[in-house]
Image (tube, rainbow, N blue to C red; front, side, top):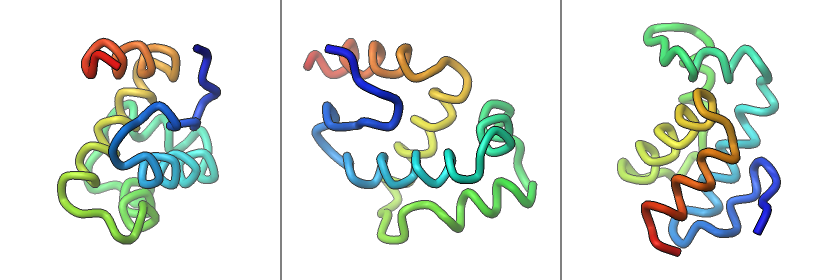
Length: 90
């Protein structure tokens, strides 16, 4: 099945949080994706990203979401989807 970028409907846990955060990054734009790709710390764009992510994150969902976004920034959406299905066996 083909999933459009940002459609996390295949995700069992934290689907809403991941979709919310993905939309935030897309709204900020290419600059945000590039910052995630490099995982630059202590950067005002990264501060904006962190402060704009889903407000009710728990530590686990926050870290998973950020790791997913970094993976997507570095490898692309299709590779993320493949990796998710491979790791979860869904």
